[in-house]
Length: 369
Ligand SMILES: [Zn+2]
View 1 (cartoon, rainbow, N blue to C red):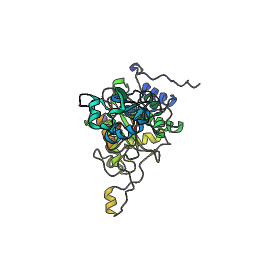
View 2 (view 1 turned 120 degrees about the vertical axis):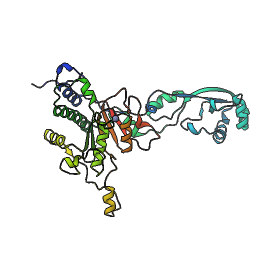
View 3 (view 1 turned 30 degrees about the vertical axis):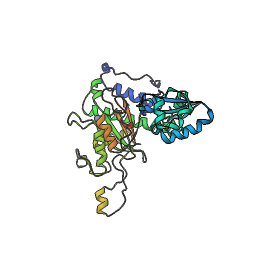
View 4 (view 1 turned 90 degrees about the vertical axis):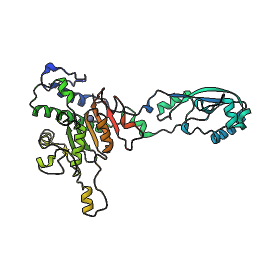
């Protein structure tokens, strides 16, 4: 008789004394019914941050449009384009902290003397500091002050609980559990019979996938005990580079069959994976390096730049170095399974992928366990 799927999150129990907990995680991820969730920037949350502005109450309604026109010309709210300038009889004049004069009356006299007599009085009003980006925000923000808002269909879906279709979700879960399978393989081939929580927590694995051909391009296993920066993600990116005739670390191509297609994955691991999962595809699309392109006097590049359009599945939340390497290598999406409260750079400590000044942004998803 088949066992009922276990929907309780696996807990590490050292007394199990073998690989059972890792196997439980694999089963849990496959049987859990929830969708994975995007980790989005803080400006997409429900909480409204406000700033204080001076609002002027107009004596006569007929003067409202004239007042707005003049204010937009002389005191434009450049950084607050998301705010409607008027609500009922109150017109936004300026942020309170921009007034250096003794009073708002003096300020108005100085910058828009034409309006001096049109205001009944001035009040301080709290208004949303940031633009509205989501429908659910609009409902909240609008109660505070009227805001301009143009719904973004993609963003609405990204922040929903059903971003991925069931089929897509199964694919993401498969690759994430493959990370755990690789962890199992690693422990077994290291002749480690007892995997404690500490030992498991020290291991990280990353898989890079080309979703356009549903194929594993590279795998990286943490090697930081031998080399301080060879974190799983860094190793996986270097292994991607090897499929593009680059790469800086151990040249596995020489150790294995020299194939550029498969050298993103360790040969022994490759054999294990193909035997256990005959359906998976491993290998990058045929790629010509820049040197080849120049040699052949071709003018177009057929291949990606490192992880362009690739998805990266990593067992543990990447640190800042790895998260930044994923920016530099142009990853498209990053999925991680376990948060790292002390060092994680994609959710726990910061959300590096949401820093607007960076020149590349990838999407991040988690929630497998
Ligand atoms: Zn790292």
